[in-house]
Length: 191
Image (cartoon, rainbow, N blue to C red):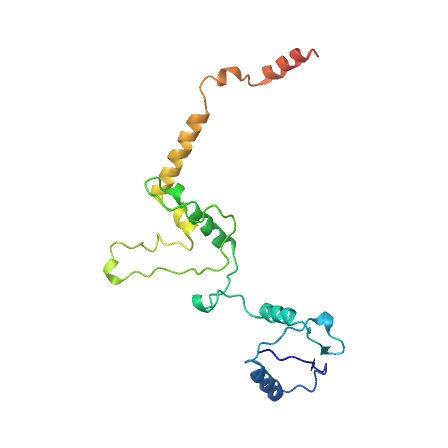
């Protein structure tokens, strides 16, 4: 249980020694401390809230953000642009290969997971001929997909198909290019 009551810390920095600070830090590690906001300190004196709900809320804020004991206290990760790209690719993996089908999963949610861990697959020596070469290994999933030749050809083919579908024949003859279009537009306006 957290210590309840008045706590006082002197503002004298020149009298602190290494022996006293080590003794106080080791005795306070077992008990979760209530964070002391700087705005509520008056001459170094802080009075914790009398309401137990508020006190528990302050104690929970001071603890680290983890998944809990059942998930081995997995910490919340910081999301970098590379990790964000990897998550987007994992969500859109059904588009990459038309022959593979995946479960629906959590693809509708727009927010990224708060708790996750990234790892590296280490192959056993028996999988010598099936593993990636050093040239094929990249730092992220996005880089691997961009450098994969089979996926590159598939993307190019799909883009060509879409362009052919959208480029309807017979539209070009209606477009008048060059100075003539300016002159005709001017004549239509009556200038």
